[in-house]
Length: 221
Image (cartoon, rainbow, N blue to C red):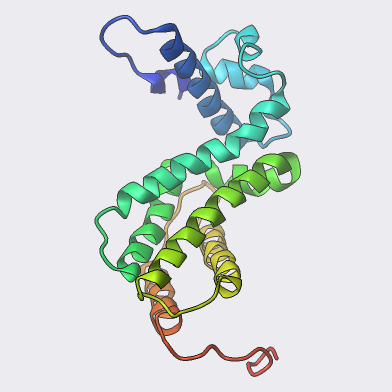
């Protein structure tokens, strides 16, 4: 699919700023598709501009180098992911409903953008700046969500020192389930049992007012 086709056409004459934004978006879309298909190493500027149906020289009007677009790619896609999740979970009322809808929305996003996982997983090595920014954006939003739920009495009254590792645990759950249930063609097929178990862990753990089990008392202690 040619990335420029995704820009669409609107009636009337577009402003210079609008055209510039469309070209930039097309380059990001093309870069995402190319990295998803070939990986960062083989995602050349030539391949990106060909996928976007743009002249190679146009690339340098927006980015100084290949690395520069790589350093922005994951945060841009992450912002799209967060917008998708917010939209999908907008009708939820309780904490558990929001978590379920957000959880499902993450996997529906992967179905729409199957190249996201490869971009995310390879970014730690090939675009560490983007990787750090992405996780800063994701964890910051999740912390605000949990703090709000705590304030409203929807979850246990845990301090920030407990919420922070919890955020990483919940994000890791999504990531590893995505790896497990994505096939070699990038198709995500999350079983309902996985959703049920995730919600059960939250309902019996985070929503509980019982004190957490102390470190060392479990089977790994």
